[in-house]
Image (cartoon, rainbow, N blue to C red; front, side, top):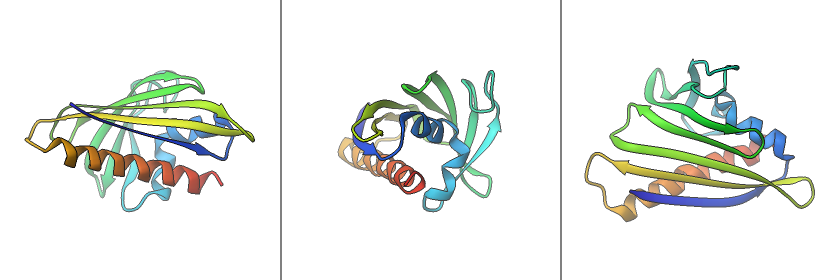
Length: 141
C-alpha cells in the first residue's frame, strides 16, 4: 500500500471548502480533462454517505463512493469500480486557518492490483491530489 498526503491552506471558510469537496460533481469544471457525474445519490442527500460519482470523460472512468462524512471536518471515499486497484481510499480533513481560511490535508492510500513501483504510484497520487487542491483554490478565490 502506498500513501501520499498533501497539505495546503485555501482562502475560503471551512464550511465552503468542505461543501466544495463533498459535493463532488461541482469539481469538474476546475480540473483538467475529467468530470465528476453523480451516478447514485447518497443517504439523506445527493452527496451523502453512499453517493457514487463517475470520474472520467464521456461515460468512461472510475466510480468513487463517499464512505464517511463528518460535517466541516472530514470526508472519506473509496474507488469501487473502474480502476486496477485492490483498495484505494481518499481522506480529506478540514480545519480553521488564519484569515478565515481553511487548512486542508488530503491523503490518498492505494494498493494496485498490478505491479507498480511504489515511488511511481506515490508520485501519481501526489499529482492527483495537487490537481484537486489546485482546482479548489481556483474555484474558491
